[in-house]
Image 1 (cartoon, rainbow over the protein chains, first blue to last red):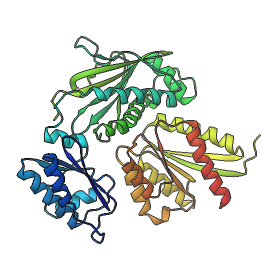
Image 2: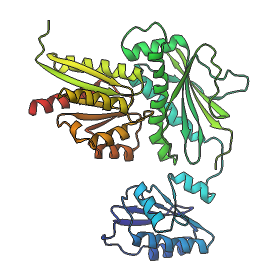
Image 3: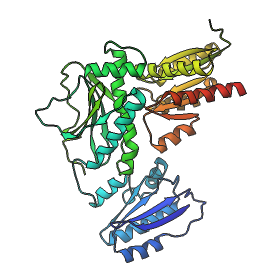
Image 4: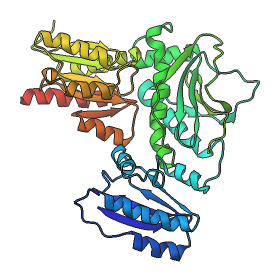
Length: 279
Length: 146
């Protein structure tokens, strides 16, 4: 195993790599941490263990020592990227209330108050723009050109198309929904492309494809969002269909519309937050 | 008239009938292109539970699919539950059956978990004809080598 401690301006990062099982040799890293903490005058630390499979009692002991140092300065420690085995081990050691785990770096930073509470992160837009274009190109053989995103007004229709695929976006610091909304003629064009056959009408057996498109877009955007500190949980998509379908996203908060121009017409991607503020 | 010399059996497990149709079309195109003399037999299941039912029916006739294309996120009985159940049922573990996961999930941890459960390949949606060509090529080559 290896442990690397670095100064990240507003917090100290402890990167733990490799196998930390009981029989692995390990040198104390709390001493090095103590020196760096004193030198930097920082009071928050995040232990990253994405590439670590197991913890030994020695590792948790070292982290507990670090926790005590930080607490004495009114700071705190969070553990990010711990797998199920590590989480259970921490719990078995009776340390889960002080060695608190988070699924994302952003979640830890929000806990420390180092990241502002906000309803909508503008960085959210790009991963969805790129993901939507890629999914439509690969799966629907369709090039999309993004138009200017805008905030949906209360007077706008609930969903902008006739067929919509909706999927939840749930993370520690952001909750909302993604909806892909498409007019009936464009959707018929899209499914004809996808199925390689001329489709003349929307039916039960093909309408679920709009939900699948939403699922694929979220799947593609997730990796980029992870690098921004949003660890998005898996969800199942649903679809709504019918002229003037009056279904609201499950969020009900602010809604950003990402319109895309295609040779067949405009396709809308909508990202809506929940009404509650995220922290 | 094509004279079929062999058979390739595939089981598609996905809760989306639309995706199963797209996948089925892609596999048909791949097989026609890679080995036109193979007769393609396609089975479809809506979730892991239905897939196990089909596998047991095939097992009664001493048969098993050459390829199982499995979705990860499915209601009722998902890809992980299916794989765990299949692994624990030795009678259904035919050595020639290859499993590929086709999922919108792209987190490396989830991909690693599936690969540890004996999945041969993990394809991320959206998927192109080339991805299926590549997969089928591996399956057909491994059959030739056996």
